[in-house]
Length: 233
Length: 194
Image (cartoon, rainbow over all chains, first blue to last red; front, side):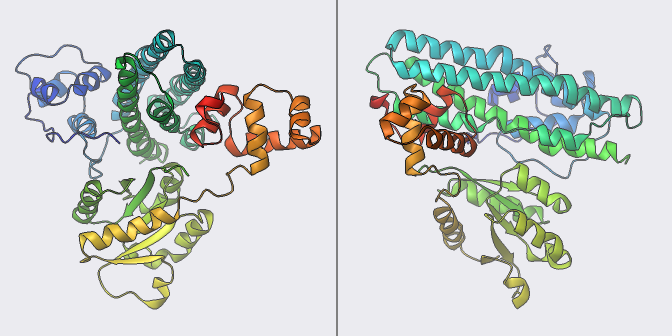
């Protein structure tokens, strides 16, 4: 795992400072649906202005800075909307930005190197991308609307669906990245400009880190919160 | 044999202990990801979802829930259980664990004990392909039909089909590209032979 040793984000930090510390924060903030960052704005002010639970925001920032989840934080039912919005925005980032970018680089590397193995990797990556897209589409269209309905209708909807079904559908989409890493590190022998190969490799590591945090948010924040709502606590 | 990162769960209520162990493991050379599981009531769920290989646990968590923990142990027999002890353990409880780490153990001793389990869990179990299946896989990758594979390997079509079925079941991969990548990353074929 690719971890940064970074500052521990707190409410008093300036937002621009936490981005300077770790540029991934720009994406984190965008995933919260915030695009307008003022120069002197603190984390607390940003959260207040955009109606985001400050503890939740700080928790997710610190996951990106390499810290473990703080289990002492209790979430309110309303936080569910923020978490879902965050996850949906990051789905867009994966499916419209990150995966297409890596796929396009694999194609370019194939064009340059003419290595047959890259054609196989391209197919493998496309199949993997399709799986990820299907999984995220399922969450966006079925799981998340069901979770939101739990609060909006203030009762369990009459459906067979539940967080248990969500868990069962929950697949491990990160493990294929290990095979890709191995391919790019050990199985590509190419005497030529190496920048694309290095770029693809670092993109894969960045994607792995992002996906790891994404699934931590789903497993350790979202699911327990949905359980809490389903039980009517 | 490929080396995979292992997942270690820390089951301990005290945050200072859990985080201390996590920091210690982060600094070590061990190829693991450690996860603090505070929600002991749903341990079975976390263990399954997070694909846990080793559990480092404060034995007092088990005391009144021996039945629940034995069930987890039966359902996930591959998991190694290590007790993180604060005092001398009762004999009966001790038999539940594969290893005991006293809380005042040295840094080296702790990492060595965990490393021992990592080294011993590298052997692939039921999912490894047999030599015959590997030979069939090599031919599938070349794009040969069942009939052609039967002729090349001098076996019946039925045998080829049964090997093919086993390969799909064991690897959970059906696509040509996926099988090729599997064979490459498991050293069944080399890049030059493709």
